[in-house]
Length: 119
Image (cartoon, rainbow, N blue to C red; front, side, top):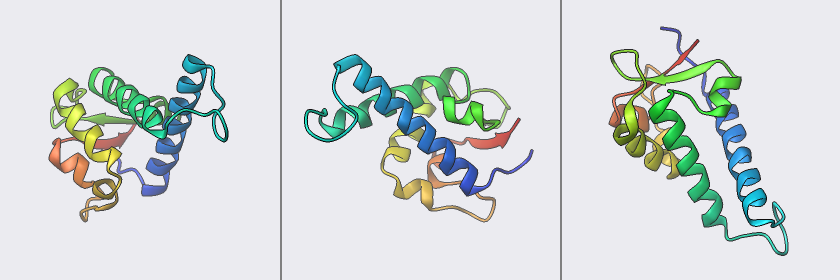
């Protein structure tokens, strides 16, 4: 298993956040920011749904796929929707993702018994 750097994980997170912003803008017909943009909670909700479903079913988000990473459980398979919901909810809080152990796993990974690996 190859560990993934925090910088690489943050870049994937930024890509995923931008995909969520674009999705909300396309669905609502509103601008990405400024006057007329939607409530930021819509963006967070879209981010949650996209990351939750993609991580749970496929093991990767769009950002992780582009950067050659995947989320897996101890058995090497995608973690499923329940564990992905826990992981994504903690990720949305931001702080748990920044708290890492000596293996580079964030609290959201530890709580969902997952890990991010390079592919």
